[in-house]
Length: 450
Ligand code: NDP
Ligand code: 2IT
Image (cartoon, rainbow, N blue to C red):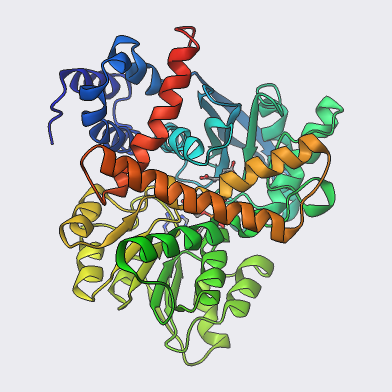
């Protein structure tokens, strides 16, 4: 689709020129710019202040070598990244991803999305992201520790509790955050809230582990209730992935009365008509770091199918993609629609391809985009920062109540913004616009320094 606004067309052309071949980054930028057509037409101050061309260029981008020694004494070299994308409304904030597919394009798409997501939370956090092409799979704890220490030795020069606060993402959970935090503290000799997702004994927030999955379900419940007078009760749910987001999405969807019948990992998916036994998944994934295929050995009524895309052919009312970018394509979307799906909400970042999103739209499927639907994780990270600043901690119930409130507000802000700009029900446009407006106004107020 060509841009109608010459301003947006020229900004996008420049982004393509400056970032050749970075397909994930270009995909994320294009989607946001498409949502802003009506905004830039209505409010010329954004163009007059060069807001969009500034927004698409990271404020700072760091790439570094990460050398470490494996268990056989061999030197390994990985590539580390931190993209500090936008600090208009707060310190850079966003996760670290450890996965062999990580490259500059992936980190930039994630950092770009984080700007709008973080703005939507209503909390004072800017956008950033980082990670490495290090593959934690099959590595010993010692190898992961040595990698994390080497990674943090460089990263520590660029972050800080009031500068940039990383957290987890794919491949980074409590174990990795612990090693990273320990190394930061040793290098700087200071105990500060420089990372979130910390362990509960050293400054972590209750409910951060659960927050992204729970938040996704709070958002979905509100979307179902407002837009379709529906709820999770009695619905069949399919959740891709079986990591942090997927596990706690399962837990909350089940608590709200849904039945989760399928989950996956990068190898394939399991289908269990009785409802996935989450205790088994947690044991496999959180304790043993095993493959989801093992599930059928422990639950003989279930079946395992290799290949992860087939999960979208499992009939369901609600689909929650919680694995990775572009995991749900046009074919998957068509299969979901053919089986009568009523709502799709994204726990992962950009899991649906643009073609898949178009299929949902054309068929009246409720669609909760990642920036809005999975913002509960980073929102609770911001609550962890608040608790660290106060040197105080809230109860699980207090954090959970704030999270729920935030997710309900995000839904309504996105819904209202879509309506205001004449695209009622389009939460993709609504989330992008609502997230954009606050950041854009802050950038204008602060002058052309960045
Ligand atoms: P985890 O590392 O805990 O789990 C990731 C899951 O996704 C695993 O089941 C993994 O399978 C699967 N997966 C990863 N890469 C691929 C791939 N290329 N193809 C198929 N499956 C894949 O990560 P999280 O649960 O934390 O993250 C999942 C998604 O949610 C990501 O998109 C992340 O950016 C997003 N997110 C995470 C937040 C958080 O707080 N953790 C907050 C907001 C969004 P396998 O083990 O086989 O690799
Ligand atoms: O994509 C995301 O929002 C995250 N991985 C969570 C980031 C955070 O800072 O908690």
